[in-house]
Length: 367
Image 1 (cartoon, rainbow, N blue to C red):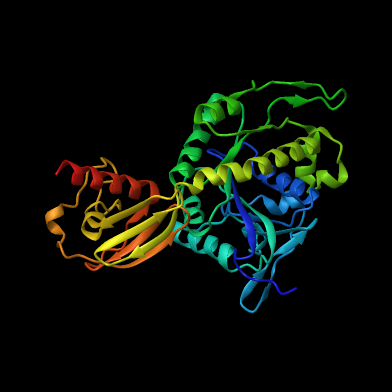
Image 2: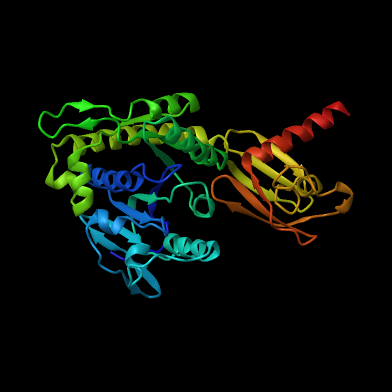
């Protein structure tokens, strides 16, 4: 079967994220991939943590990818297609690259890899809320995001920031996983909680998102990670393997529900009438916003002070006859506009566009 580059033939792209490092996000991503494969899905895994790539070790292969007609052919292990910067470089040294180069590498992983036909592409994100996360949200139409945290309050509070970022970008939150939630005894399989329990569940309840479940600090998971072993094959009845199957099933059950909720914030159709942008929303409503209003409400750093949030741009600087020359989508959360005055750096989120539209209607009514 002919392989196709990019995300065209991938049903669901799911990001695995965390607020901070050391919570086991990459281990969760790998084992969720194995669990989905066990459930008979076609799965790919993209290691987007360029500065600390873990997937070669977790999957147990250092095989380097090959090329085909200018595209990258992903490596396959245990039926999982994957790509990682850890197998792209010949040395084991640190990746010392600036953000623009990192973004270019991520774009290549998204569009220049022969992923072919997949049910799921899991993206193992770096910790935090930086350029890589934003690039993926802009370039990939995410079906959902899974947030990984440990039980401690501090870890959960930091993870909450990542969750809030993806909510702002209108990426559906599939749920929260609490990792290292208790220690499984290797002899009696009894679970104790040396690090407390419940931080992830409390965060999910507070943020009103699904709680996908708890994963124990299990010796089998740790051993399989160190040795690149697929638990679903080698230790299918272990506590760790069964926990990942349970969470994978829970994630699948939430997939349609959270996507439906997110879709209501999306645009079905955006029409550019130059002096007016007309939007048909997926919830059945419609908006019309004039180009002058959009230009004066531009949210970019040139028009709004990043520290104070105060608007720098003055409305009198914008000609009343300004037009929108081109309008293009940004991920599943907004649009980017090229204006006739040459300005094109603002990204208008759909939530922001609805606010501008509602504000314009209120002004019209008051007049």
